[in-house]
Length: 323
Image (cartoon, rainbow, N blue to C red):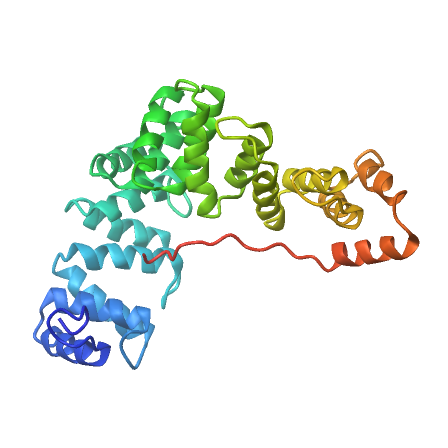
């Protein structure tokens, strides 16, 4: 109650103290909660060894949440040496008790085969169990396996159905993929307006390709009202994240004044950044940059080149693995 602030003032210190009292009496739930608090730094002194010890005590009593947490601990090496084999063991113990996140985590681990033997059939089975219980990450992963034909015959329609279920829960990666499929009519009926809505959801969550594709939709007026200013805004976000196609498109918009004020220096900057990102770039790859250079004074070229040199991409946001 102290940990959640449920009827009592929220206090990590008081929560940890009472969890420790209960854990010392062998209560599995208290051992699990205290171990997690120690891992997250919500209890002091924070030590990985003590956290793992409490979690293992809870796991030995069959506590599924502790087993799932230990799977993550061993997979990522949090306070212990990484051990995919131990991660699989703990995920499996929790998954067999019906722990949804453990089912999903076990499926993903078996799909990738990183440190354990890959097993697409088992991965599909565990992911399907979690997906049918509305886990959006499992639904998305299952959709991808059906799309790519991992352990099953490729089936875009089935993939789209799983992407749809995940997207309906606000899962941005699924929205981005389904939006692209809606634009193509791949596995689903083509629907530009629905595609635009899906891509907007994903773009607002910082999915770079969704930002680029949404920019294209606004530039063309496809599924949305044509709006070059909004097109340039989405292109700018994707370009800042390092997507070369977006950088080239944004540079063209600055060169011709489409959706932004015409700015040859900015155009040169973005063409330059895009060209430098292409391995073994040829003269043809630099043609746009050279064309814009003819419109600039020597001082403007120096300034544009400096802007390109000192540019660094921004990093899209990511979620914690312990969420």
